[in-house]
Amino acid sequence: MRRRDFLKAATLLGMTSLATRCGRESRWKTGAFRKPKASQVAILKAASYEKNLVGVILEGIKTCGLRVSGRKVLLKPNLVEYETDMVINTHPAVVGAAIDAFLRLGAREVRVGEGPGHRRDTDGLLVASGLLPYLKETGSSFVDLNLDDIKRVTLLSDFMGIDALYIAESVFSADLLVSMPKIKTHHWAGMTLSMKNMFGIVPGVKYGWPKNFLHWHGIHESIVDINSTIRPHFVIADGIIGMEGNGPIQGQPKPCGVLVFGNDPVAVDSTCARIAGLNPEKIDYLRVAGEFLGNFEEKRIEQIGEAISSVQTRFEVIEGFKHLRS
Amino acid sequence: MALQQAFGREIVLQKALDFIRANQTADGGWPINTTDRATAVWVSPLVGLAVLTSSGWGSSCQNAVAFVLKGFGKMPQNWLLHLSEWLGYRNGPNVNTNLGGWAWNPGTATWVEPTCYALLFLKRLPDKMQGEKVSGTIREAEAMVYDRMCNSGGWNYGNARVLGEELRPYPLTTSLALIALQEYPSRMENQKSLAYLKQAIAMEKSALSLCFGALGLDIYLQEWQNILKQLDDLYHETQFMQSIKTTALALLVLQAREGRNILRHGSVET
Image (cartoon, rainbow over all chains, first blue to last red; front, side, top):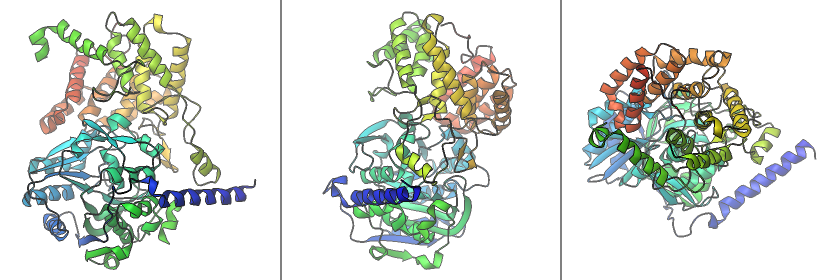
């Protein structure tokens, strides 16, 4: 068989496989999901990490109608590793402002939790990234989700081909789980946003550093299964300065000047992709999640605040993801 | 220490060993905690190290060795990765997939950290438990760790490059690899990695990494007393995040200052 013929055959096989995955309801438990008819996503401008972030976040939470009073909140930022002059992590000022905002809205408790995927020395990441002073200032505690107690959870969808995953226990003791990603391109997944950010609730103590177990079962598949089972209640995406190119670690800073809010992670992530000039329908996990978890079609997303067109910033992608532009 | 004062050293040790014995699984390893019954590949050699120094653990140790050796293997082959490489979508593997090591989870890729833990355990086995299989496994695993070294020296989790881009080493995994390869201090790779570690540790903000860095540099007879000051500063800033494990490691660092580095081969009779 010639290479070209093989390529055609492989492409056909891949398309068939994906179509089967998207179309078969047996991949998720029928009746376990109620996809909303429409979702709200708020895009609010935030020019820098210095000015009135608490005000913007308060507005975002209120605009989306999130009930906070009396609830225990777990903020899940994206903390990967720290390098000077790189924009790898959710900015600590955004996390600090979110803690402040949730406390002002009457949250009973606000904790911050993360389980970085590559490194087990999370203590150093808190200090080097500058998050620790914000935790001290607000009296919030931090839980290393990699080293937390763990709980075996039956998956509600079946894309990875396994029955269950272990999840950090602290996730279950929170009333509100808030995914706080950095808007970044990703060299394996296309983009990493609120749904991919949930890899951090999968404990390293069980799956290691890196959490290769998830990659081994497919990144897109893992993203969908984790989010179908543990769905973040709210998203605050840090797009004040995002990352383009060879993300999630070695890409370049991309100023975008927005924070994006919503209670449908699929809708928020799809909106972030559109803000970055990429087509969410071409990102496998978003398209599949759009079948049963949330909305990715523009017509089903009510944009509040800024229009996408007014803040759209073209993110560069690596060669393998050029097709996301079409 | 409070427990030791209350019950005496021997009683505390015995209670700890009883706990470990009670939790050894049928296949010879140990789980990550008491609520998870699955044997953990990376935990087992570390627990094995602890029990090696105790008397009356012959069969238990042999079972642990059998479990660790069973976990040794080459990188599993994924047909999709092969296909994408052949089609030119992906560069060939950056690592030598013919060299065996240990994975975090069975059936997945092999990595530096679990391989170092297994090496530490196997190298400490008493002569009567060594053999051709053990020594052959050690040799291949050592070659695997060297193969995963970053170009600039040092190690990260076990990938020197991704998509053609060089990846950076980390102080923690570099320390672990240097400790696991301590029999070869004059090898060029060790020297290059030591140079990286000495430079990187000076700016390190993780107490966990500083502790392993200190223990590693001590084994290689390098100056590391500055790390005590860094640890002291960090303790005041973070209280080591209330981590019992990090605090215990810091105590081992203090012990190393007194000349007893338990990660140095030959420091503990097995």
